[in-house]
Length: 260
Image (tube, rainbow, N blue to C red):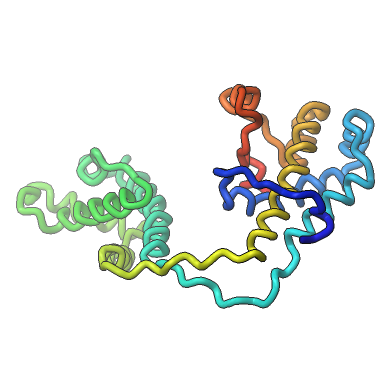
């Protein structure tokens, strides 16, 4: 293992590997602000014992996580159904927003008919929600029970098409739903290797270093703009209570990992 991670590393069970993958981006923001903002650097050195040597250690830990890991291997096969579901989830959000914004003011009856009792979801629920909404849009033109409101329904459909809820989009979503519902073999997960474990160890070592200095920065840096520059947001009361509990500090990514 890299000499920067010289001591034995024990990664706690239950620590999400995806969370560890966020730490280099969190670290680059913290280190970038600490090294480029003289006021922040002065506070950390004066109040928390930060130093040039510690700063350089943080960058070495960061660079160790960014080193190439041997030969470039063929990427593992991904379950295509999962990719389709994620695309449906992404398109679902825009679809519901467009329908809501387009119909709420000018076509309230059709707005209620299409969205009444229907909300966006995640995973399988997203697929079900999109399919239900598409079925309702189709029924605006075909449902015999809506013959009395056909003219208004057609106007609502025309308004939706003008706002991007077009026949082409509906066709694309129907195709995605059909693919999602088609049974497929799920590729087995790739076998873990010692090299991958070393990378996880480096990520955890970076996380441990970063956790210490982020906590110290929270204690000594009082200006909100400086905390934001470091990628540190105010933790919720629930997380602060949990962090002080008997199980020790909470291993949470926080808002900085999304903003970095």
